Image 1 (spheres, one colour):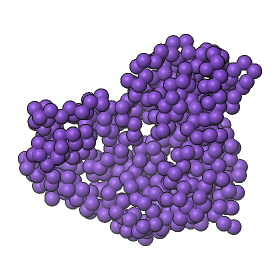
Image 2: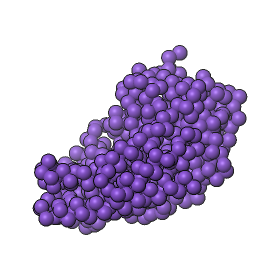
Image 3: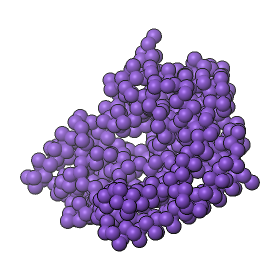
Image 4: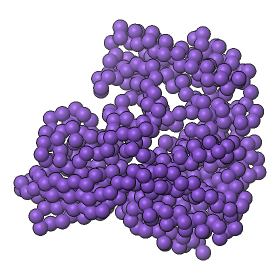
Amino acid sequence: MSIAEKLASIAAGTPQSDVVAGSEQERAISENLRAFLESLGLETGVYEFEALSWEERYVEVGFKGLKLRSVALPYSLPGEAEGKVVYVGGRILEDEWASIDLSGKIALVKFFSKVDEAEWQYIRAVRAGAEAVVFMDNYPNRLRKMVLTLNTDYRFTEGTPPPIPAVAVSLEDGLRILKLAHRGEKLLVRVDTKVDHYSRSRVVYAGSLEGPVFSAHIDKWLSGFTDDVLGVGVVMLLAERLRDSAGYIFFGSEESGAPGYSPWYWIWGSRSFAEYLEKTGLLDDFGMLLNVDTLGGREVRVSASTPDVQEGIADAIGSSARICPDQVIFDSFSFTMKGIPSTTTHTFPEVLPVYHTDMDTPAFVDWQGVERAVRVLERIATEFAAKRWGMFKYAELTRRIAERLERVSHLPSAAKAVELLQSLRLDSEESARQVRRALTGPMFWGRYDRVFRDSEVYYPLFTDAIDDLVLLSDILAGARSPADVAGMKGLRRISGFEVVLPSVEPVFYGRVLSSPGFLKELYLVLERVVEKDINTLVERLQALKK
């Protein structure tokens, strides 16, 4: 039986509709997975935790005598609106919405190209007075679900629920709404949903958590084959092959579930489980996490936690996959933040056209790409089993820091930091984990409502402003054009924790500020910022030596 046939048979019992965090469907699938793992002779465990569970019960979008195919967007609350439609297109910036009055009306919005940023379009519509929001897709013949809240940051803690109904329709039905709206006809939007703030979600685990440990997530939106029915199937396939020589984890609450309408609503299950492992002391002996998500494309990517892990994987697999830093959207990130060597094998950029849609089916999948991904996973696992911590290039952790500091070697703080680095010994996984954890974090540059990209898993923290200082130095020396100031990172924060770091903003709400006097003053401020950052870096390194 081919991998395609095997995985298709494994996935056959999965519902085509939502499997929501904390739902009965999620629980049933977790029970089936536990029974499967036990049938292989593996000892299993179940970790239960509190999660916010949202369920679509009924949705109706249409004109008099015409009902359109539609879905409610999580976390829409029950509500109804009827009114004239205003088409706002794909606008997302505040100034693009400034002249739009939606009071008493329904907004028809085209999903922004980066669909995860739909929340900002929703927030603009709420501010403009809309009674409801209808999202139309950029692609035909599909419905898409994206989680919405009314939050303007990405803190890990509680937030504000969405106040007005939001639904999604296909591209062609969006155009139909637009046509009928031009005739002055009113659109009806009716949504009925259920929110349970105290549902129980699950993580199922089995085998040896000393690794290698394979993982995938159970919950999904709509058909969700690549995200992540396929990943679950791949982990099941690997469990059949490797049995008790590896560990296996199936996470609930990846797509949503963080309590209290948290802006960082995703990867809640893996975050909770990582905390549980740490509190119980089980994280100390945890091996290497090999997460599987959004496979289905041709080019296999391995997003890995830190430079030492990335280099070790590169030695193991060569050019068989593209290696890049971990990403905040994956369950691996929850373990990366604990200092654990973690990866996600994926093809995320290629699955975006079907991401969170009802078109995410086996028909979309490049099965040769899946076979390559399985081989990559097996190769990494084999290398880790053979070499354990010897697989990782610990020297990369200090080399990357020294490389950054070399760019500002004229600063007194940099010389002190380099001296400290030379005395820092990284000769064990324990010491490496301490450094990874202290100096890895989700960095975001710019303002959330103007720069639409994911936070970056960054190592080493407190060295990113060095790039801006060097660029500004080159501009002042005449080696670069003043216009190049637009390439500076600007406002800096550690997202999730929402810690705003000392920053300068040469690009202020879209305006590039580049007068000579301003740039000279900017350099003086930025030099102070870099000095402070390096001193913070030194403090963290000194704390590790104690």
